[in-house]
Length: 165
Ligand code: HEM
Image 1 (tube, protein in one colour):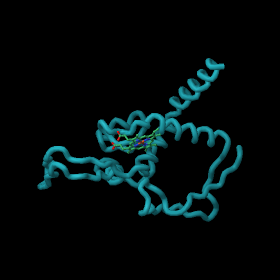
Image 2 (tube, rainbow, N blue to C red):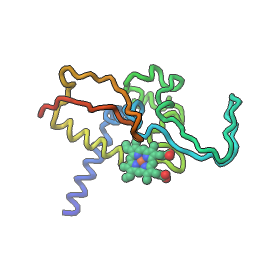
Image 3 (cartoon, rainbow, N blue to C red):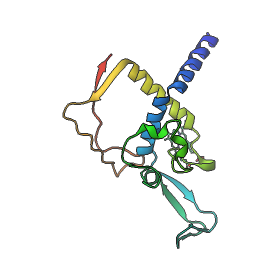
Image 4 (cartoon, rainbow, N blue to C red):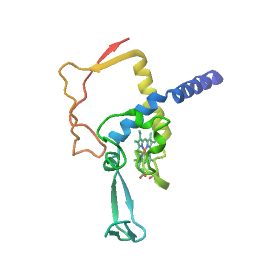
């Protein structure tokens, strides 16, 4: 019993690891829509920002905009376009270090990174195996973020049509 359930999870995990396009889609979704849209830091030493007149003083609390970095055309061509090819094997290494930080970075990086990605991919793989999702007739998908939420959320619902395969 124990060994068969172990092999089930092992198989599930190794199958997920082979789903490269799913990985690209999840990465691109987290780029355009980072669930946590900023990281917080406290400056522990005066820091002169290179090529600017700004110095961040010791003790200052900072919000670093993940959403702003992820939508910066300096790092991503046509940043508002949803393009999973940015994360293909041949392209992903061109993304500069720290320009993709949906889980934060450094010593306080999200401890649930792998778990979060695996949960997301498992949910999608199970749903897409059984259902086909299409836009609901007449539904407009122009996304406005809800300014009252801590996590990045869309105002209102996202309605899709689900058909069992
Ligand atoms: C897709 C899912 C997730 C995203 C996008 C996400 C994102 C983040 C981000 C941006 C941070 C701040 C990192 C930083 O300041 O550098 C963080 C911290 C954290 N996350 Fe997640 N997270 C996810 C899932 C999870 C899960 C599943 C868990 C637990 C099982 C988790 C536990 C934590 C904890 C404990 C911290 C604080 C780490 C620290 O301050 O040392 N996260 N997460």
